[in-house]
Length: 105
Length: 231
Picture 1 (cartoon, each protein chain N blue to C red):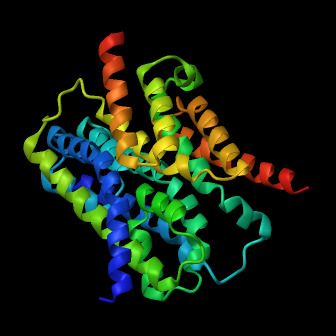
Picture 2: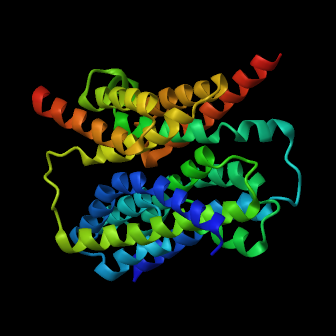
């Protein structure tokens, strides 16, 4: 029962975080600086999400060292730029990490 | 359904499939986490996909509740991990000013990372309100259905994926596949690089707060680069 309460509270909270600005949009105009900044939410937040996942709690040292995950990220970025294909990026990325983990361990 | 709608639905489906490949192992892991969390009722754990619909928060909360964590701690963890959605909401708000009320109420329920990433990179600001709704609802309902399916499969199959497979790399890899080709301006690239470096540096912070710190500093850096470029 207490688990259901926890999930429900977070679910309701998450809905309000997801809907807040969308529901109130149009009621006031945003300052130009904010509008300008909002264009960088995508690149900044999604890149941070990628980096946090790759660093896996190891900080910048883990992120830039020659670990399979970091090298897999470099391979995935190269494929993404070259072929612009998400499935290929995911497949090559996982394959590179798997091979390097096998070889390096 | 109009012919234009059908084409848009097809395009939305085509954009969604690669992301499902990245989400599959994540969903299976969520299913496994529910079954392994003995103090969490399986049905209640499964219901978290409908109640919360955010994989990272669901996994963190379920493993915490399963290992004796308090409800208050689980709630705090879930809310902090999901705080990034406020930035998605703010970023997409300008596209909602002329949308009907029902869509403004309903659409944010499905505003997950993947939906935000696809809308931000694949749908430009000039698209009609109706087309945005068709595209949004198609990808949202596909993700919602498939996420629930993946979690269910994970609960029944258990640990089917060999531990040596680096499936956790699927999530960052799919976002690399969407974000990197979409970095078309220098300020956007600055935002991405700074966001990644600061995010990695702050990654030891608890509750996934590194993501928020990296994201916010990246936004500031991108904006500064944009203003610098215009002066």
